[in-house]
Image (cartoon, rainbow, N blue to C red; front, side):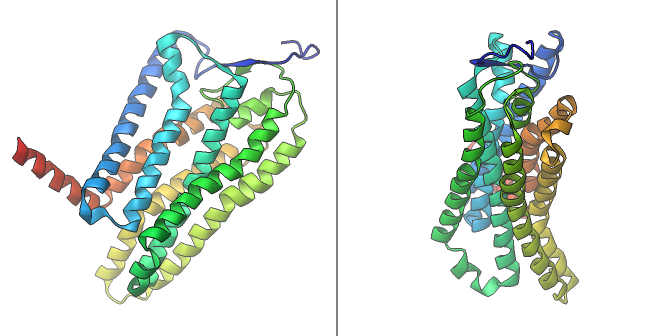
Length: 313
């Protein structure tokens, strides 16, 4: 589209991973497989926690919220590729695109808050074990989880409202596999100065750095408490209970920092696709694997469910 002849855009074309039509079906099949395994893994976690009374604890309640967030995020971000492969239609309306951005930002903010809440849960369990059952009650856990979901939406709504104010675009082709905020901002001919500043302040410093700081503070006190444990077995057990959460926390923040902590004018969208794929497809796939392979309670629950199924057969 000629830069001197801007027009009102009513729809976007989601370019996908490659400009070569022959590669799109292969990539779509791979993404579909990743998506199905992601849904299966997170649904397994949800079913195990729901059916096993021994997993009815605050830690696994928050893990269920994390699994639901992963399912929603994968569905929101990957459905463009899957629908395009089935129907051949890779267009999306402007309002639909902005809705997808809102859902993605909301879920990401909520996930960061859930991870911070899980860090606080581990802090109470290790640093104040005698008061754990009185502090992390069922109503408190429900309130914390609801707050994470609501705050995630509130933190994202202003960004999307700013995107709605964009009046024209240089092109309607989004160089990405879903509607993400950076590719859309690359296309607009409107002034993005305020939105850049808003994303840097509220998006990075508040939505991302605040839960990061809360989690780091929680782990500082956790480490201090663990080092006071005289028994090496006790220290190892305490560290082990935090290892899954800490692994997920570090992976998620690393990918988000690489992907978003740069001005949108300096971002290479082609390389950003691979980082985004890891963040939106691989991370939701890895989360249930990390929590199942590195968690004795989940592995024990698997064994119990498997024995019950064998007895029924």
